[in-house]
Amino acid sequence: MSPFHILLAKELRCFLVSPVFYVIGAVFLFIAGFLAHLMVVNAGQQAIRMMQLQNTFVQVNLNDLVFRPVFNSLGVVLMFLLPILTMRLLAEERKLHTMELLLTSPIGMNEIISAKFMSVLLIYCGLLALTALTPVLLSLYTEFHWHPLVTGYLALLLQGGLFLALGVLGSALTENQIIAAFISFGLIVVLWMLGGFGTLLGETSLGTTLSYLSFSEHYDRLIRGLLDIKDVVYYLSGIVLSLFIAHRIADSHRW
Image (cartoon, rainbow, N blue to C red; front, side, top):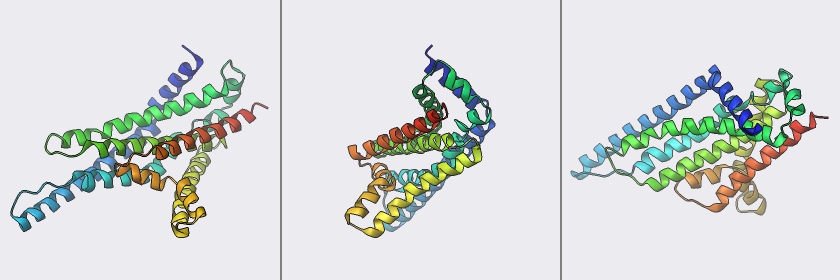
């Protein structure tokens, strides 16, 4: 096994024995399931009201009434949960003075950062996969369009990847895990607020730039089923940039 795979396996083991992971996973899955339940009940009630008015069977749009509101709400939930999931990645290494061992071992900083990011990304993908049980079960009873659902999960994956990369960056800045979580959350909030400032400035060049730098519009287009390459490029660029800055900060401790 390469050093990358060894470190990746070690990080995954740390997550699987950590109570923090199970608490965050339980909270995330509970919120996702609860939101889906509320939206399904609401869609059922709307279908009943429309049937009473039209006196005929009505096919409701589950994509608009169920999945899009759930995706929209989960995007906000991730802002709070993912910084907690990533706060220990590098901060704990510095606090326990094991970072020096990593820096002096025959493993590059690229592999260290990549392994830590990939470990938490795999954990997050596992949680997302469990939420997919909801549309699978609904598909047994009704029909809906799968394309907006696929782009919605792609939006959750890319948005989560960006938040996790910002979490790695926040963890690289301090040895205190709580401070690392607050730094990561602050970075996410700043990106989110850029969209509001861009909306206030309107169609000006500055407003357009701020809106593009915020993840709000990119995420909203994806959960509406609009797959644009510039949205994917935005997220991938943000992930790479965040990991690069984290790499430079962590590597500076070598000296």
